[in-house]
Amino acid sequence: MRKVFVKSAVSITCLDTFLKENLEEVKKSVFVEKKLVEPNYKDYIAPAMIRRSSKVMKMSLASSQACMEGTDAEDLGAIIVGSGLGCLMDTEKFLHSSITAESDSLIPPLAFIQSGHNAVSGQIALQLKNQQYNMTHVQKGLSFEYSLLDAVLRIKEGNKAVMLGAVDEYIVHLDELAQRMAWPDELREQLSEGCSFFVLSEEETDAAIEVLEVKTVQTQNLIDELDTLLAGHSLTFESSLSNFVGFNELPVVDLEFPHQVYTEWVGRYFTSSAFGFHLAYDTLKNRGKSGDFCTVLNFSDAQFSSIVVLRRV
Image 1: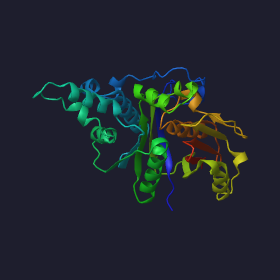
Image 2: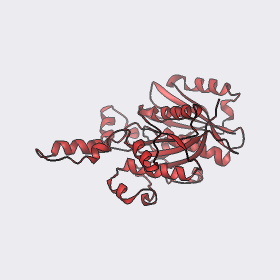
Image 3: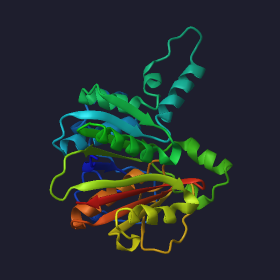
Image 4: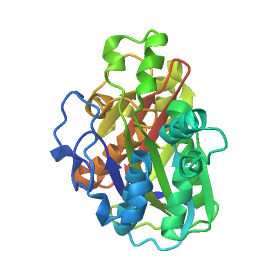
């Protein structure tokens, strides 16, 4: 069975994480605002594209391009993106222009073209001139995990390398919906945005980071399922180098094991677990030794959550 390795990782969040060699050097403080720390998009995107692109598109194009520059992968067999909300800001613009347009007037098509959930993966393919498998997964708080599962399957079925990404943007309507759902104020204030992109590959190098396990589970059984997964690889939960935990729709709860809550640093958005994945990769790359592993636990909602295990070979 072919193994899957993470070759490069890039994230844009509310912390200064873009192209940082060691995320542990980034100040891990309690999330206080939704403002992204964005790179200079002119370094990665043509000026004409910057002018007509939404924020979700710009940060995805820049991250994917930077991710490709951080690896020697040339033959991408697939581009796979996960997103809980897709490009809803462009959808809103299109609907608004349709409603307010005068009779018999022409409606600008750009917002409609960019409003689809798969617009991000499509634009990345155009930028990279890639005509291979192109997929977008929309599964609420598990959108990244299903994208990761898809990417792992693509590698095991023969692709040499795969572009994997996850992105969500903050829209004002989210806060309104959270109020209707009676979310506590402390949860609504943590609504945020961000994106993370990775290149996965079949190529094993010295100190490579392997995607050991990816699984969605019932939330109430998460810890038991984790123990079972690790036991299958002769590992124990207590020996983990670090455990990264995120809470999407659920309140933060005390867990009886050492862990770091990444949603307290970058806020809550549907695909924030992709940043937890980046943290695990970065930790193993900078502090791990052969055989060390990290877990990423995404408490998505009251029904389903996910487990991802990365190991340094």
